[in-house]
Length: 323
Image (cartoon, one colour):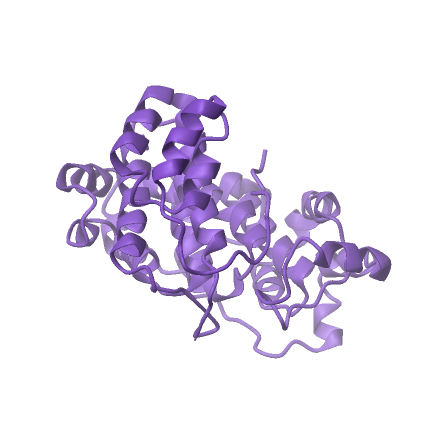
């Protein structure tokens, strides 16, 4: 892994033009508005400084070429919400366009490349993408709010699955959505799927968005069904935040419904078939999101058989489907 600075002094942090730019955009009056989108029970320790998402993106666009990998990792570890968001946006941009950064003269000098990856004929850019995905996975504990997840998970980890784990995806689909079949997926994805952490669970779902326009869309249905079955088998099962059980599963059920709804845009008949078979095991929140583009009578038929659930709803959050 790259050498990371545990405690960054103001003098060292100021060397990052990206961070200086962000700190110049701070607007406390907007910070109060931003907090309305995120219920405090999800993030009692988060600090909002009032930088808008388009401003974060523009800052990355302007300063990424002059920003070091350590600077980006420092942003991921920052207590300020918008700084972490910018860090994940920067990782995403570097993943999509590795040559826009000056992070590596040799990828393996930054992050060791897995042996099975080195043995295959990947381009230099793909090796860099592999390294960025490893950095992302090492920092999922800092990807700890719905907007951070939704801005990055599918663009990095979803694409990573398609580029590096095609054989694993095929084996998983053939085996079916069972707990045992999860063993056929790459180890990093197994960890996310089996994690009790609310944000890692959401990451494991949102990353599926990248698979929907591809031949691997079956994986999205299988993973959604895996989660639906898991929560149906134990209605009292809860995810955790910072290691503490959290009552609401809203953000998980909504993520499942979001992915299913987007899958239905590519093949409405396949979504209808899935809901005919499994809506009775899914929570109403999932089914409500999944059926948003169906006629009201059709959606109602599926909603009427869905599970009502145990935990209360915390907040209505519109998924941040990135461009």
